[in-house]
Image (cartoon, rainbow, N blue to C red; front, side, top):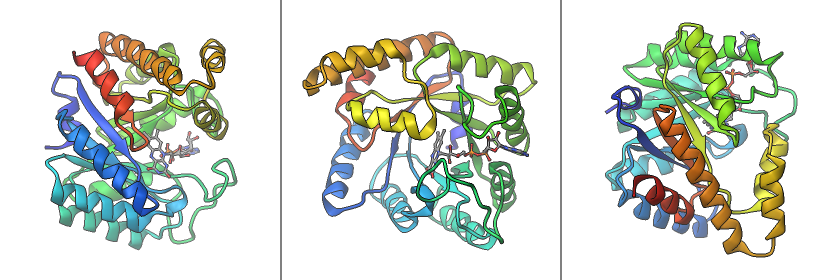
Length: 288
Ligand code: FAD
């Protein structure tokens, strides 16, 4: 099965995002999480491509092992950072070889501070759109792209960002997954603007049950994501109580997920950070 086809089937699809482990201990945690999540029968899982292309080998190793050792349908993330076109072609060829049929095509952020200057590799590519084209001409893949309900920090303005998004879909992407966000209205505004531009690519909301205040604040700074003040206040009020924070995270993600599905979202893509406890609770709440 291919992710783009699943998302057009009319049934909401649920997926989980993992990152490549950085140590043996993290590897154990990831595999426990995968085994727990496999029981739920998700539609697919994805493995991120390390920031700045750093965990390249680990991404590939993890993707390969999920394919060989589990029953999970696997989507690979691929970024253009620091790669020549020839290297990208090799990576795409490897994914084809191990049976990956769906790839999320991303430009990626510069190594170090993701807000730093983007410098194109001399033999590489400039925008995600070109990676979409490269993957499409390399085989029969379903290709996804990133979407940003609040706009991307590098957009000239929100409307121009939407135009660039539609361009990369027209280049051959057949689904999209959003950055995590907390205002459902932002997602609906993006979806409607994309539809108004004549683009019918399914846009899956990215969703993350908050488990840690510092982590989400850091993420908001790095990505420019707005973090609603009322939610921040609720979390700060219980900041020393990890269970209470988790409960708020699960509740917030459940309310959002419910509303997004009621609004016709094609599915939900959970950022798990390689832990399954909160994700499983949200899953139970939504699918009961
Ligand atoms: P692009 O679509 O290329 O857009 C980048 C910027 O360029 C935007 O501001 C856009 O408006 C602008 N632009 C596009 N085309 C043009 C043009 N023709 N002229 C002028 N400006 C243009 N990062 C990782 O490193 N690894 C991952 O695994 C990863 N997974 C992700 C998963 C999801 C669901 C999301 C939402 C993001 C993920 N990212 C990941 C982060 C992503 O790589 C960064 O957010 C990156 O800055 C943007 O990538 P993009 O593919 O959207 O870029």
